[in-house]
Length: 182
Image 1 (tube, one colour):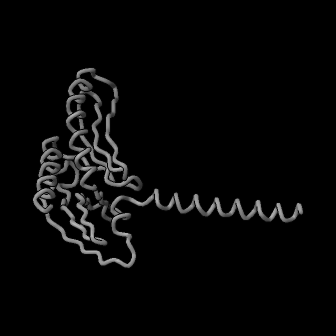
Image 2 (tube, rainbow, N blue to C red):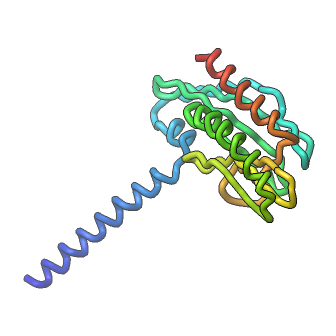
Image 3 (spheres, rainbow, N blue to C red):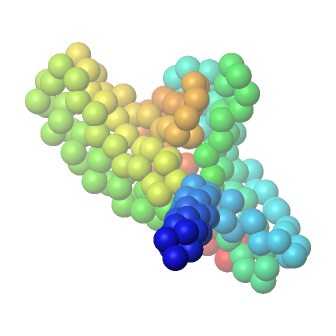
């Protein structure tokens, strides 16, 4: 009797472990990966180049809108690529996240002026999407610098636009392109 209970409890624990592993694997997928991981479906990719993003370090970053048709659904992603020392770094930002980034940029813009006027030794303020893309700025020694973090891990994943207008133009251009394709 005790032996049967022991075996049943082991089986129960093993099934719970399997369920939690499946949940973790699903949670770790980006929106792009979830959208394109429909097995048994034809997936069509279409790219539309946008103006390059001018950077402080390393001249420019490649930017495009990617339209994906998968399983009868259509998705749009803003993709920003930057050539790094150990390979390219890329962010794929879903359209709904792009809209949130546009809203966050307006808030960050208004806060940046106030934060810079405080003359902090160091201050950082940022917005992070569900997929880990970051838009933010830091204040140090009386200067303000905007940045974008393309990927959560690795080196060379942070880029620094020449000025805030570059980021605003990029987001506006991407939103307009997606809406024209929709």
